[in-house]
Image 1 (spheres, rainbow, N blue to C red):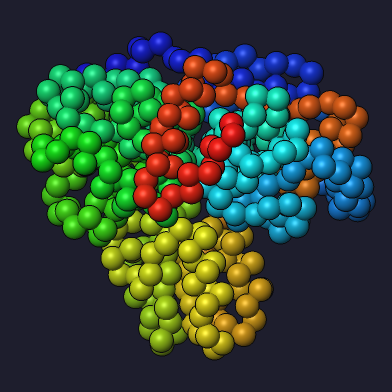
Image 2 (tube, rainbow, N blue to C red; image 1 turned 60 degrees about the vertical axis):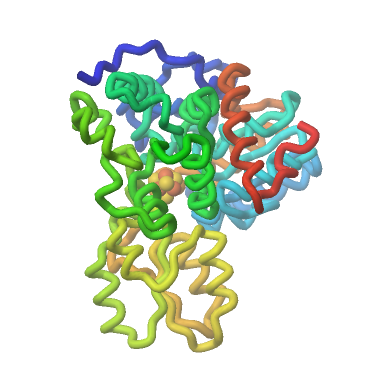
Length: 413
Ligand code: SF4
């Protein structure tokens, strides 16, 4: 029976305004207290500028100029246009973690979601502050794997007699506490661009009988195991943290090669193989590019699968006149379409598909955190406690030691 009784680890402390938010505060999913065991989140206690203030962009510009090299603003590819235009660096979560690790500025304003700000905090110097403009900007996928659930899952593997031959591998899109668990149990972290290399590494740690526990995204785990490493679909089982015993028998756990956590991205899981078929009929010659967080059937039917950084490169390299359908977050697809008017870049879904939590970072929140810094006040700081920081850094270092990765990420930290 899965029991959610394990003690919670010391987790991220977030401060909003002058008040400190105690560990255990719930994430305010879409502004409401929804899940007491999720990532930290609070309402903004300060004077948030009105969204209708016509001076907002100028206020952001003035505050940014006044801060000079005392701040660096990072913007994830999925951010809104009116926010990302103020970013000093843009990228996916891995690239932005690299930029944060190399940053000299004492303040890092991270326009992304909570797990990304945590990763920046893990990599930043102790004297640097990492600020998330809206602390309720979480990630539904990261929320699907809670530390207490992972402790229970590991105990389940122990009862089945397979924990000693299992390596936990977590996607970057997970809480610092999950990353730390993986580091402490011989595992590592991966990104959407290095998942095949990381999964091969994990298998190498345990030899022929080795298993991988992949979390929190079952789709990235399955796509990697089957489409990149050549395993069969039947080699993978899905562990459901909300079911007794994870919904698996001892025999199923023993027979599996990859144990996939039952989690997904609410944005990328919307795409279907029927959409791929429909766009091929609608736009003859179209090239379908999808993110590996999409379901197996979508990735199987696509022409290319890659991280956001890879998709951006492929669109840039495509010849004029190319027809491209993309399955990833809508802000990025719209931006790519606008930046490449000589190509026909379309969104694979026919309905709106923004990432709701990414969109929580808006201009009023950005202006609020920048103007607060100008006034000498740090608001919405995200700081990972030392014990969690230690083991999550170990897991990150293992990923960075994989051949071909940028080992300079942790240099001089
Ligand atoms: S796009 Fe998906 S994985 Fe990325 S932040 Fe949004 S919910 Fe999380």
